[in-house]
Amino acid sequence: MIATSLSTQSCPTGYCGQCGPCRREMREADRLMIPKVQAPIELSPTAREIMAEERKRTRPTRRPINKVANRRATTATPYVRPSRAKNTATPSPCTECGEMRGYKICGGRGHGYTLDAVGNLCTVCADKPKLTAQIAALEANPTRTKAEHNTLSRARIRLRRITRNGRPYHPEAPHGTSNAYASYQCRCDECRAYKTEQDSAARAKNR
Image (cartoon, rainbow, N blue to C red):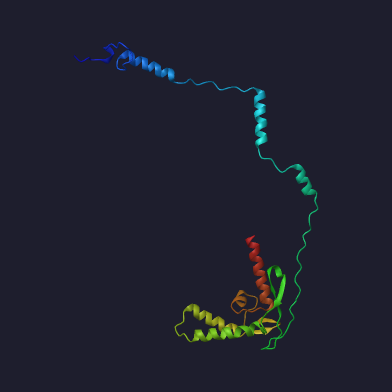
């Protein structure tokens, strides 16, 4: 005969785990195993002060006061701006055209001077063989691209430069413009002043 309910069965030991009394005992045992939540521990004012002092000691501190005082007490070394280099190169005429070769500024902030020349020639005479060879190579190619045509035009224009006041000068250039400085490569006073002004304005804009 099969029992209709486990709760009606009797357990002689009380630990079978199937009858009703055993299950009730197991539930009670589970409740006893759950730990109780303890109340937080209240620290005394003295303990709080001690812990606060420990936290202050572990924090990173600044540089000691005596070192800062010593650093400020020392005399600062005055900054001496480097003077511009003197013209060490001796002006000499070009061996081809006979014009005197002038100076050009080299280095940052104009701290150096050198002759605007290549070897014993001025810049104009030194560029003539290069421009002539470039023109001949481009003219030999009948199917030139637009970029090569522009390069040929600029080479022909630069070939007509002369040396005036020691610097390259183009008599047909629109002086004082970016076209005269870049395309014609004229280095007269007006073109160089324009380029200096443009560079100063660009540096001030990027600051």
